[in-house]
Length: 110
Length: 112
Image 1: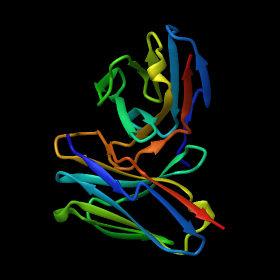
Image 2: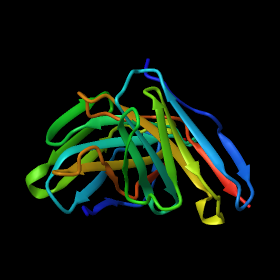
Image 3: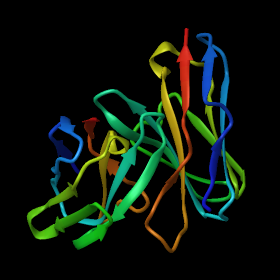
Image 4: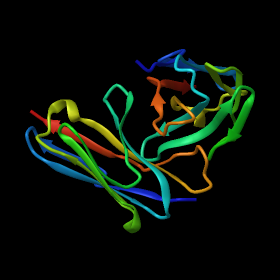
């Protein structure tokens, strides 16, 4: 099956700093999503982005499908950005199945 | 607003017990999913269902079964709980025409 690797595994930021999270995947994908899991365990979809660039407030994401990676940018980080960020992909012939990366655990300090 | 609910936030069971985890969505979504989440392993798909009474195995179905008798409800069953099934269990749903999955709050299961 497809391999999804995220880096860095852990990240500590001071409030106001910017960061870039990376997701590499091993095969062509037809679905790529970024999720944020808050400290209480709730997972929220941030972006559906199999290719191209999207922005939502202080967050933006870029997927370069031909090079098999996606980046999530967080600007002017806030303490509420803390949690774990997951990249998940679905590849051709996988149907409804998403494969998740191991996540990046982010802590934003005040 | 999209809503996925799970029957329990925390659950403690004994080895060998039969365990039912229930998930309900109010969005009329065709697709529903059960994942487990373990430290360092991310989320792994156990089973999913694309319609009532239909189910497909995910990556780690061993030791689990599922039931989908109604469109809004998807149950995960541990026939005989074991300590290695201690985990966080997450349910999700998705509309057939969309790509976004919506997750429930999760159930932390401890098997003693």
